[in-house]
Image 1 (cartoon, helix red, strand yellow):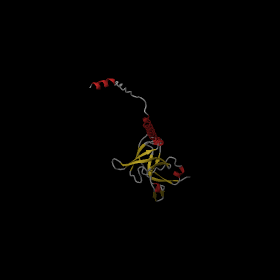
Image 2: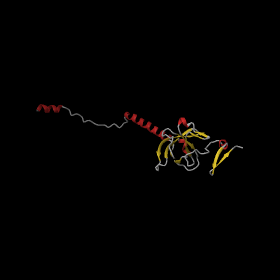
Image 3: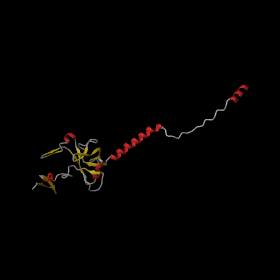
Image 4: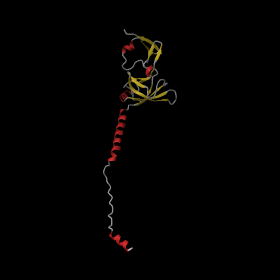
Length: 187
């Protein structure tokens, strides 16, 4: 036992370990931070390029398909149908549309929407382009009036639309006024 005690005296006491906390930036955080910045940039870009979302009420959704049906003005797409639902009272359908960002100025109560379908009636043929491409929603935009996001769709296209040449209205176009039909001709 004496020998064991003497050996312990000869062994030097080991110095106590000192723990230092390192407060520097670790390289492992570079990848997640870059991914977060890229994701944030993409989210901001998507939100800034998104146009107004509106609803249009129609009597029927005949020919309309969510994700496919376009809203057109002068044959240029200005929006797309994103969802079609029955109205709360089930007397019609509510079509949810995402418009292009530039169309925001035209979302007023004076703007008209109607469904363009192929129509062949005695003496009148219209919408033949929809036979191949499917129905689309026509738009007659207006900057006048109150801003709104809820619209009542027309069942028939308006007689006069923005940019329509006057000659196409005047030449042999029947006009209805107080339930009377008149025929207009150029002089």
